[in-house]
Length: 209
Length: 232
Image (tube, each protein chain N blue to C red):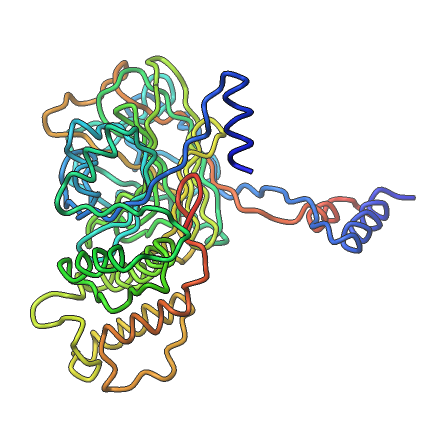
């Protein structure tokens, strides 16, 4: 159907409707004006000034939707800390899953979430939704993963206030929290919740994941 | 058939057909910033009553202009929250922003907290529309931007809609930014806010972005509302 649309538009001398691309981009805190957490490069690179974008944040990086020109896309993906989604709805190849796992591992996110049964859409959607849990936690008490707390930390090892806020953040998003135990790691908890949202679209400008 | 009975029959027919009733907007807050020039915003009374209180940023205040708009009056960021709370978290905040010149950033927000500067806001400046989750404690988060081509001496209508976790900004009635955010879920107040870069000049009555009016609405059912005033 899209091919028919493209041919029709070409015959009419019109350009095709653009489709936003999705990228994983490190965050930049308080760079540029107005102040706030933003995706790196979009906030401070002349190549990407005034580019429309939408972002969802997962701790140290963001899932970014942006409609880029080929030059802008090439600039962004040439950065060593940026990963672009290729075809959104086909299963990841072994190489793509490997690249995505490496990206997540190097940015403090649980890499076992991703496998070849995932698509870029399902993997990015999980990250976007789980970022919401951490945004809620962040709203109450700063970053979750800092100091001695990482994805392997068990719920029992969290300070009682942290545990209450972490689990409460998920409950606040109407995620099921029953079944979690003292031995559940933060990675397992986030995976448990991301499974509950893996089929729920996540809204971005011009469409969603 | 009386008017109210016809409406009732129509509502029933729509319900049978699976068509939702027409929705109507209920205004819970309005301010056209009509007041004596130079009145501070904190001393100004909105059209719908209540007060404005500064909930974020250092001192300096905002001022009513000689054209019945409101503008920043210092080089710092500032947030003002209205004392009237939205009756629902799902609300629409609409501001008319006059761009006299392009200097600083100004916007309107919702789900505002009356004790600190936490809210969602649509912000205009630098030829860009911004959607932000503002938080003076944890830090602001940019949810989205839209590159716009803006002209001086022009009014722009900026609209923030908040429906559950779907937060949107419209510019002149056209949806430009749509994002998902679960951080702020409770109903709150209407806000006005702005950022003034330290290196930029302070706004005057003839420069920068000013807010001409702001309105807060929530959606109600017109069928239910239409029966209120029929006076049987």
